Image 1 (spheres, each protein chain N blue to C red):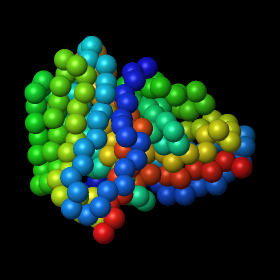
Image 2 (cartoon, rainbow over the protein chains, first blue to last red; image 1 turned 180 degrees about the horizontal axis):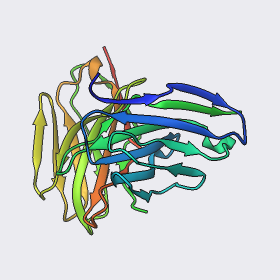
Image 3 (cartoon, chains in turn purple, red; image 1 turned 120 degrees about the vertical axis):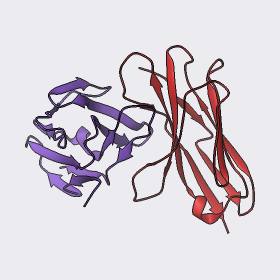
Length: 112
Length: 113
């Protein structure tokens, strides 16, 4: 199906484990983003990517790693999960120009 | 870190009421202002993208205005309906080549039938 898909939708993991959240888009949008949603903070940018092999830190990058070997995929890895990383994670993509983002459905991650 | 502020935080109105929310942002290095509608258990959906001072956009009963010199945007909903219940987010992009948006915390609107 066309669009932007995130997987898994829900994930429970233990403190200290590595976990990867997947994001895949079918439009060949150049730009992709990872945000986390936290009460009182709204959406905060973790990392973004302007193209394959080009990534940059956002507002809250600590504890996260991203890669973008292919335009359509932008996985987010928590190297050693902590309870403070319990959140809902949204992936988004955007094409060039003054266009809005298209968001994925989100991944609800709980770190216990 | 940019400071994008939205007010009020939440709003309860009756069906048929018209309402408006405010988004305030720093006016320096302004590039674009986005509005999104975010329904519970769904993902945010783009409503408007505005770039020019004085811009006005309209989509059905929802409209938005932009003042880049003083750093604010208004979102208006005319004749609110229960299906308008959602969180409305604004987000700013700066003109530094960095495409990422900085979001406000949102205004949560509930429309009572």
